[in-house]
Length: 516
Image (cartoon, rainbow, N blue to C red; front, top):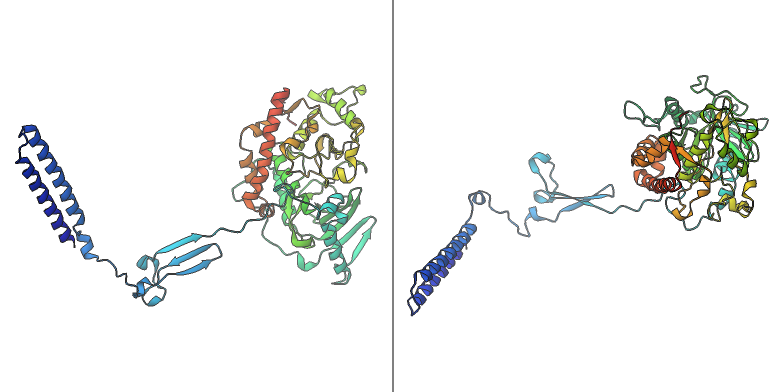
């Protein structure tokens, strides 16, 4: 076939040349220029013919390896068989002679393998409120209004308490009342050791965590729960778990509510408490209590809950405002102008200052704005448009914004042995609030911000640090669908950080060092 094509090309070349010379023999002027043009044309066409012949000529390697038989009846050309691997991939491989899959090693057979990636199912949104804006929240409306005593956490607690009262053992199954505290013993068979949920693969933890932070996180995530307690408060019953160990790695004194080391269990909807703890440490504010995510057997549907370290050193709180120092909005604005305890100066008696240092308010305002925690400084939701399911709307507080100076601040907490510094409690953030509905009332009266926190917001490394920090908490990482779900939350914080930086520049707010 190849020789026939070569012969055809040679004949066409001969006929072309004879036709050219026949024309040349006519009456055209025989100049040297015309002769050169004809000769050049013949040479170029000849080169073209030779290249075609060479490309059609068989190579030596092809003679040694003749083409495989592609007949439909050949066993080697039987249709490949597909295998489904874990629902994500198809592996399509050639079969050996006779249609049987070859069992020879891959180095000798070298089968043709093709991997086809299937589109995975769309993952559910993260559990933290606001990752994906919900259409309706009728299911959780009652849970937002009430605390643990009427939520799914309380239902699971009561269920386990009833089971143990029915009598699985004598000592461990009894529920004893000690004043206002209900003690519930955990069955012996449910305290088996397990792998730590705080994963640290490098030589040391991230630098924004102290050694005491890591010990507290490991305790909250991995400790054996000996007893479960129900402690009543003005916001509903608080549920604690206790590990009455003789070893006390924390400087916490025993109290009537907690004789050993305890953790406060919150609802699954309050998972943003864990996010707040990591953000607080990265920004260098260090005012929140250690918090991790943990799965508990008595919680309905097995949802992970935020667990916060119980700090017995906190000062007694007022039952109405849950604050160790009670003040109204007008008092707060007056104190901001007095620069209380700034540069070590003792304030005058007529200044109205409290024991709280001036810089603490700046740190709290920055922290609350990024997370949109409005319950401390704007409990009546006067600085933004609340939704129907917000607590301030359910309690009718949003209708009482006519006299903002008379509104009480809430959750203003200090330690007994350190009254100069605040402790941030109840740090539930809101990630589904749009940029045009942020609560700027949280920033009223603030004239300076901490340099360490602002520098991190400007450095464009906040995302990297948050991802590295959240990776330590295995349960939290998995509950948010891994990196994809967590990055949606970080996107919200980064957008708010840009708005805050713009606000700082527009209002001429100072950025100064605020060392403890």
